[in-house]
Amino acid sequence: MTVQAWVTLTISIPYLLLLTMMSVGWRRVKRVRSGVNLTGTPPSISVVIAVRNEQKNLDDLLEALSRQDYPRDRWEVVVVDDHSGDASKALLDKWEQKQDLPVRVMSLISGEAGKKAALSRGIDATRGELIVTTDADCQMGPQWLASTAHFYQKHQPSLIFGPVLFECSRGNFFTHFQSLELLTLLGTAAGSSSLGHPLFGNAANMAFPRKLLERVDDPFAGSVVSGDDTLLLLKVKKLPHAYVAFNPDLRAKVETPPAQNLKDFWSQRKRWASKSRHYRDFDILGVGLVVLVFNLWLLALLAGSFFHAAFLMPLLMGFLFKSAADSILLIPLTRHFGRPQLWKAFFPAQLVYPFLSTLPALAGQLVGFKWKNRRYHVN
Image (tube, rainbow, N blue to C red; front, side):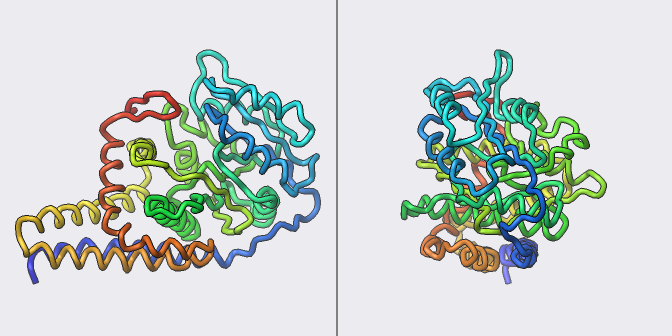
């Protein structure tokens, strides 16, 4: 066996073990009983949404929220406008005047800006026992709040994450690739939480009791542009007698549109990666190192194969290991969420994934990004 083959084997085994562990964790999560039937007095809920230039999405979001099957006197929606340059604020004001939805609209003042500032301002104005966050471009079913509240009542976690999926109405490869990637992240988030070592979550479907804020200083790490979800998770991990849980109930899912083009995808992934420089968590750093080294090695083998045939067999080994490891996690996830159509993109996605994941992640550590018509530098 060549040196390249030995290195490939050595690097592949940790990756295979990692995905196997996440699959075991996901199977534990799936066994958690979930429902929508509440006992006693339902918890009061405040849904907080930060908005900037979301005119095209707000009607669909607020319509979905207006259809929630939850006692009307036990929940509210607080939307905070972050200096939108389109008609978002005017549209929100119209919804506030309607009787279809218990919504309050706020605006950030001069000197305040960004999603984290908007979330903090909105939460300060809420009254609910349970704070729920989502994004303006999300859609949810009518039992979204009921499922989240039931999970909170039954398990009393310190922080809850629910499923976030990409819409798959468009059947092109780019959409399916992103959906597979997000499913892998979802499975890793869910599996790691059930194993007692949560890695990350998604604020597009996040909930926590108000009393948590009394135990966490600067919950969203306001000095960092991105990462309101994972950075909060890391603070919760350090608290005694606190734990992070994942609600697998299909009724608790939200859907959001994927990036429409490579430019938007690149910018989004750079933004996601930019927050990782602030991680000081052994679990995340260890997992990130395993994934990064494995993908960098595949890229190195691919580059080497253009110059020497000795790299071809180790390259094939690496991709087979990766496909097997990813399948272990993705098979139960695609079944649970009813996304079998994604498998037709699986093998092509394996070929491009090292490029479309590793390169933006590295760029996110080195250069800034543009988000919501604002330019951010790496901080």
